Amino acid sequence: MACNMSQATRSQILSAAMNPLERGATLKAQAYQQIKSLLLRGKLPDGAVASVPRIAKSLGISRTPVREAFLDLEKEGLIKILPKKGAVTSLISVKQKREIFLIRDALESIVVTRLADFITNEQIAVLQDIFERHKKTFRGESGWDEFIRIDREFHLTMASFAGFEKIKEVLTNIRDLMEMIGREALSSRGRREKIFKEHEKILTALQKKDKRSARKAIRFHLQETERSLKE
Image (tube, rainbow, N blue to C red; front, side, top):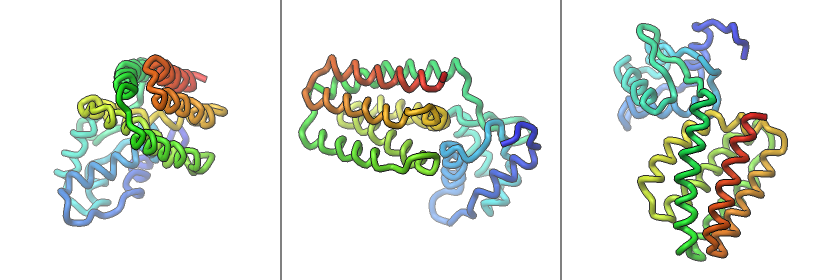
């Protein structure tokens, strides 16, 4: 996407990708989900300006639910509200990326260490199934959405199995930010296959109930993912 794209054109990209809402769930919730989905799937260029009136018109609703959705998305760090202009998609800085990986390293190390203590054969089977589905995702950009979705499922399922609901909550929010930069990591040459190998090592360590190896495997996986963003 060209860097000199006008704000009007960027706003049109956003509104054109939306569908009118159906009555049922709250209008704010539906507006929130549609905008967030576009952000996480990388359908908006960095710095794209979202106009409240234009989005409200595209969704067939008043401006108030859109404004409320913007407030929630800003709290999550996905957009930044600009006075009298609407909102702009957030640019995640190098410092923010570093913080994201520090948080993930701390929390996911706790998750796998705890999980290795009491993981069941049934839980191993569930994680193995997720792993196999992950490997079957399409190669290239056409498969990135599904790849990232299943990668998210793998990590958050481990947190659920470990019984850490609050940690899962934090990781869910972190994963939202991760999805905005996940495609950058996937564009690194050979990263897809390396991720599979890293996940397999995590699974093997958990199956053996080897806490030390599980912790080492998850930390290596996160370090390699962060490193791929710098290549």
